[in-house]
Structure formats: C-alpha cells, structure tokens
Image (cartoon, rainbow, N blue to C red; front, side, top):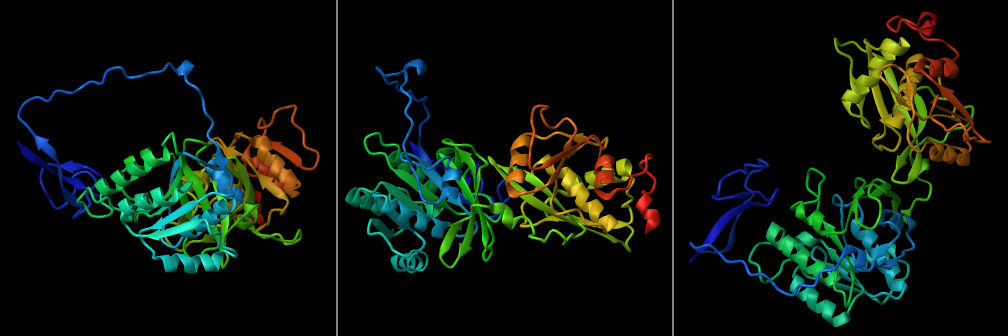
Length: 475
C-alpha cells in the first residue's frame, strides 16, 4: 500500500502524473503543485451503499422561500435579487482597490443596525486597518460588528462558536487555510476545502447563516481559483471600476435567488460607496437644448431589468495611411467594420478614406444590438459635421440590408425616455404593438437607415448605395 502523488495546476486545476515546467491545459508556467491523493491498492475497491436513505418525491417536497436581509443600499439589493438570503453563500470579486472591502464594511454596519450580529474575518488586513477604514466611511459604527484578523479558518470557526453571528464575511477566501491540509494558502485544495467548510455552516438547517466571501481576481479579470468555486456558491458578484474612478458597477454573473446580469451602480467617494439612483447621468453628457454637438447620438440599453440612457460618440477624420483606423472602446472591431460596411453600401456614405473612432460616455460596453442604429447615426453626424437634437434617441438594430430591426422590451425603454423628458425616438417600423401609444414622446417608425438619415438631417442618401451622398457635393 502506497501513496499516489499527482501534480495539480493552481491556475486551471488540470492534473498531471509527473512534474513539468508548464501546464498542458492552460500553458501557464511554474503552476504545478505536488499533491497526495491517498492510498492506492492493487485490488478493486468495494463501494459501500447506505440503506434506509430517505428520499422524497418532488411533488411532496415543501417549498420554502428563504427570508432575505434587506439593506439600505437598494443597488446592492437589486443585484442580489431583493436582498441577502439568510442561508446563502456569496462570493464577490474585483481588482485591487475597486472598493469591495469598503462596500462589505458598510453593508456589515447596516445589517448590525438591523439587529444582526456580523463577523468580519480578514486574512489580509489587521484589526487596526479595518478600524481605520471604518472611521473614514462610517459615521456611527455599531457594536455588533465583530472583527478578527487571522488566516486560520480553524480560529474563525472558534469565533463563530463564541459569538454566534448571523452574517459572516471572509476577506479573502484565498488567504485562509485549514490546519488539516498541508498546502499553502491560495492553493486549489485549501481554497475549496475552506469554501466547503463555510458552505456547511451556511446551509445548517438548525442555524442557517449568510456568508459573503471575497475572492481575488486574476490578471485576466476572472475569479482566481478553480471554476468549481463558482459552482459551489449561490451568487457570484463582480465589482467593476478602476482605482480612482468614481463610478463603480456591481453585477451578478450567477444568482440562484434572482436574475443574473443585474447591475447596480455606486459612486466611490471619501464617505465610501454611495448608491446611484439615476445611472444615466454618468452615461450621457448634460447639454443645453441649443448646444448641439456633432458626432453624438443617444440610445437606451438594458442592463438586467433596468433601462439606461446611453450616449455614443464618434469621430470621423481623414486618413493619410493606406488603411484607415477603426478604433472602438465599446465594440468589437469586427462589429464596427460591419456597421461601416452597411453605411457605405446601404446609405451611400463613403468611409474608405476615413478614420473612425467610436466610444461611449462612461466607458460602458455595448452588448445589445439595439444600440446599432445610434452608433451609425453618431458616425453619420460626425461625417456630416451636423449635430443631432439633444431630445432625440435611436433604438433599433440594423440588418445587412439596411433595414431597421425591432428590439425586445421596446415599450419599457420608451417609457424611460418619456419619464426623462425626451421628445423623439426612432424605432423600427414594426417595433411597437399597434395598441401602444405614448402621449409625451413622439415615436417615429422607419423601415430603412436611409429614411432615418433623411428624417434627421433633411437630406437623402443615394439609391445605388455605392455613390456619394448629396451632402458630399455641398461640402
């Protein structure tokens, strides 16, 4: 009888029978760690079967809606699906300095003020460092927030038995170790065993607790460790925003108790994280009615269940190189080239000798096809050097034929525009139901891109598609 040794990659978890310099799966160097997986015998093992196991029919199972902890931070509640489930385990990740520890400290204080006992265990910061941040972001610290600074999860388990907390925060899971395992902190074995131990505590039927873990992020902006860690937890939260930036975006990539993809917005300041109730103000430039700027167009994107008014900016300039530049911070390069091809062929706007730069105000990425019409109109506006009225919005997809395509939840988007005081919105001809009407905003249905350009700028595009537009002759 002997021990079997394998070499597991700390980056992707792939197993190797012998040590080597790089992982065969992810190609990372110096990531293989030796691990003993137990005794190996020559004979076939017999698997024991438990008898008298109680199993229930799904129809006879009692459905239980877990209670939620509702915080005063509505943006956080939105992303969590309505609040923190009392027997759930959540992991939040972000780049260093994004503000995840600050946000969790504020949430801890709020839950303590609701009568809950919170244990904040940190393997990265000392008690005094946590206290210094609390004095900066919290006006009145509650006595039922307990802190413990150590990377031994065994000691944290002792703290749980001692103070019996309702909520446990672990910052971060990759820094903690269990004494029963010899691997270093952050190794796949230690991280998964620590997470499994916390999972049992959270799901204890006699004493359920809410657990929030902080997870470190890799250089590829992904949660560090094995993918199994994401499968283990109930909710995965990602906090986006570079250090020093005011606006932070919190979204869920997985949520067993709510819809994934929901986004919450926060403003980072001296007093910590503040919820942003109207995020559209960060994604569009505030201008006077008479201050019309060329190269700008507005659309409405949907992040989770929330419609957000977004400004797309474009800059078209002459090129002195054989191949013009196509630069987009918010779109893939192939997507931009597709939109430009549609403009050239279907609207007669030649851009073969023009550099085109496209970006969004606030840096949000365009994931929906509903923004295609606005992106094209911003390019047309810059090319023609004529501004689009600030109260005009575009919501439609564009086909390769130059026809406008309808988008989902169009009524919801238009209602948001009506609420914000916009006057006109261009949509696909069959985009709205015939029974839908709006009293404060004019909905302009169009069949083709050429019709939209004709309506906005008062000029027509060439019918052949490859010829120059009429305004080129004027210029």
